[in-house]
Each structure stands twice: as C-alpha cells, then as structure tokens.
Image (cartoon, rainbow, N blue to C red; front, side, top):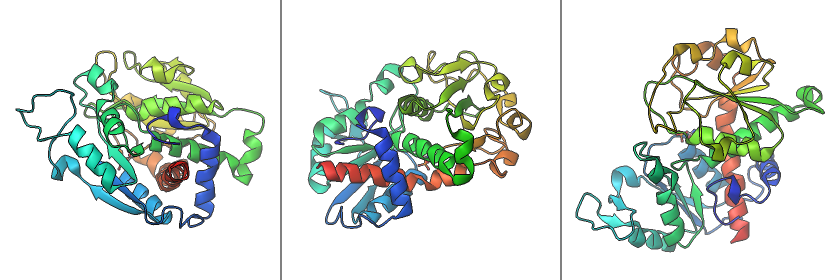
Length: 325
Ligand code: CP
C-alpha cells in the first residue's frame, strides 16, 4: 500500500483486518519495522482518538511520531493552484509539502470540509495536493469526505465481536445485519464518517447493510451504492446485529440541518427491536442529543472497544506502508 486515503487504496481488506487483530494479540511483534523512520502528523482540525492512537501505533512499530497542529500553530496554507496569495494564506502547499517530504517517511493529515462548497470539499483538494507535492506516502487522519482509519476500525470491531467463541455460532452461515442510523445533532457535521463507513461495509461485502435517515439526508451514492435506504428507523432496526449511530448534515442541499428531531436518538426501547445489537459510534458523541446515556453506558455499547481498536487499525496501515516502501 502506497497511500491510505480510502478503501480504494487497500489491495486486500481482509488481510488488513487480520493484520490489525494480530497486532492486538501481539502489539510489539514488529517493533523494529519502523526503526529510524519518522511520521509527521499534521492536524488542520482537532482530534483526540486519531492523534493518540496513531502515535501509539507508530511507536509500537519503532517509529518516531511528530505532531504538528498546523491549523492552530502553523502558517496558514494555500491549496489552490496559481493562487494570488494576497489574502490570509501565507505558504503554498507546493512549498510546504516537499519540505515535509524531506523530514518524514510517512505524512498523515487531518483536514475537515468547509461544508460551504460541495464541489470543493468533494474534490478532496487538500489531501490531493499533499499527495501531489510531498513525495512520500500520505495517510488520511480524516479528510473532507472520508475517515478511512475509523472505518477500518469499525470493520475490525464488528469482525472481532463476531469471532468471539460465544458468538461465532450465531453468525455462522449468515451475514450480520448492519444498520447505519442518522442521529440528531446541534450543528451541521461532515458526511465523512457515514460516507466512509458505507464505503467500507460495501467493500467488505459480508453484511446485510441498511442506512436509515430522515428524508433529504441522502448521502452520496458513490459511497452508499449497495446499501438499502430505509426512511423508517424502527423498520430499519428490526433484527439488526450492529447499529452504527452518526449524525451528518445534508449532502444534496449541502451542509444544512433540516431535521433535529430527538425521536431519531437511539434508546433502549428502540434497541429492543434489534437482535440484541451492539451499538457503535466513532466518538466524540453528544450525550442525550446524539446517543442516550442508557445506550452508551449499557451492556450493548461497543464504543470504548471500538475506540481502543483505532490503535490496531493504524498499526496495520503504517506497517503495510512501511513494507511497501
Ligand atoms: N473518531 C475520531 O476520529 O475521534 P477524534 O476526532 O477524537 O480523533
């Protein structure tokens, strides 16, 4: 693997999941693979899990991780080609990225969408410009439209649950029902976690996959094609094995909130419709807005296990890139 920005960069998804679970079983088995190698981690936006899990993963491979909060501490970067830089931007990515390519062996970047201009956001200009100019492998720590390290983690977490000796028989010979449900939120959020989850579940190909959301919250078909769309949340939840909860803003009329109906929040009453589903969320989560205390603190919540698995996903990705270099 050369870059890691979407599932399309992954030659063998199952091999990557298995590699991640092998690191979970033995975190230091490749502790010299990244010896004398360095990753740069650029954050144009905030993070807790992605930053810490990727740093831990790099260190377990023997790498040195350097974090740069470029969004708050660096020069304001310009990404447009042929820009006349008479405004607020100070340094062009064309100048900055090749320098980072000299300092690091792998460059990781987090860059959120503006939610103002769909064409710009969905062109993934920022991450494409780093890929064009850095000259080293690029890893997305969440981009304008996708969050691949999160989605790899999500597939790992579902497979890990299904492989437990006490659960394996229940999943033998059938696909799990996986439901991605929209949830309310107080402000417009990107579509990237939902897009990415849909893209990875579709690529996995081993789930009966349903997406439920209010009307007019359709995601891009480029990611959802293959999933069943169901506007009735309770209908969608019936017999689910996994429920992935996430808010996203509108895609078609871009970046808006049309609906903040608290009825869409998952509760134990709704969970009773499922096949004792495990509940997932990428975090951070707004409690009792997006997801109820009773679910998050209840026995069906996988969110802490899921967040813990971010380390193994990052470690498998970094190892795969190191081996390909
Ligand atoms: N899920 C996730 O990406 O968490 P952070 O924003 O804290 O990195």
